[in-house]
Length: 386
Ligand SMILES: C[S@@+](CC[C@H](N)C(=O)[O-])C[C@H]1O[C@@H](n2cnc3c(N)ncnc32)[C@H](O)[C@@H]1O
Image (cartoon, rainbow, N blue to C red; front, side):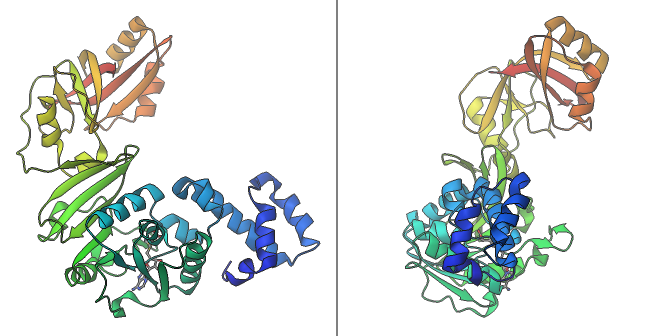
């Protein structure tokens, strides 16, 4: 589909209703039937849109996704609803009433901002994407708060807005772009735009090296359901601050600049920090809460004799420790009648699937094995969630 307009006509909307939820296996039959009464092109556009809506449901929830419009790139690049909502709430808590959303895409962030009661100028240079963003604001009843504009963001005047938000395009021809200067627009441009506004947030890839974070920015890593989704550079909130935020929640851990935790012998419990904590380099802050230390200076597993509830790490009770040896592990699993084996690894090149094939777990019990290094030596730690 390269034109949204036909789908927004009464005939287009009726077709969208007719194809809602069509399973891939039924598409051909549905298309054949509908083509008897509607132009073939419109039927395939509606079916294409239905497919995109199904894909988008994971990000936006089915209720919103079924009313929204998408492009293939737009679904892919949009911020998931939970993360966009969290960010919009944070803007609101900072007293922000209006945001220039530069690089709005299909409007994932603009929608969340408007729902937080914030007035939004949403800008994108791609004409179809702009049409989709506009249709989305309308479909969700937010058109009164969202002005969508087709323009290159580098020419947009943002004076008069309380904050600027930039979510640059990060995909090049060959998958993900990791060099922030290869973002469109480049990160250096976004940083200057951020500095010229009272407050700003820039969405960046979670793999951004800490050295690349501007000294006047706060860096926040965000995970949802344990998966790291993005990093955000905030301006006007606290230069040099670092935080890890876990969704749902939100639960936010603030960096205190603690030195790396001490290495200590493996205790009764092993804690696996959330990915956002690890990316934010806040393992020391979690270790301190747990009265724990590291199993190895280079490995982000925390060990402690205390079982303390924390949202920032998953706790496992360790029952066995053995040097890396597949035969010994196999024998131990036999003895324990472990049939369900979860393999976790940090600092090991072994493929979990390969290992599972080799040890052939059998039996009614379950266990978790950690393949890691303990004080420099390849080690297996066996345990279960505490
Ligand atoms: C990652 S997407 C934005 C996703 C959006 N935040 C969302 O949640 O739906 C980046 C967008 O930036 C747009 N873009 C890239 N460079 C641009 C520029 N110089 N001016 C305007 N838009 C630009 C692309 O067209 C793309 O739609």
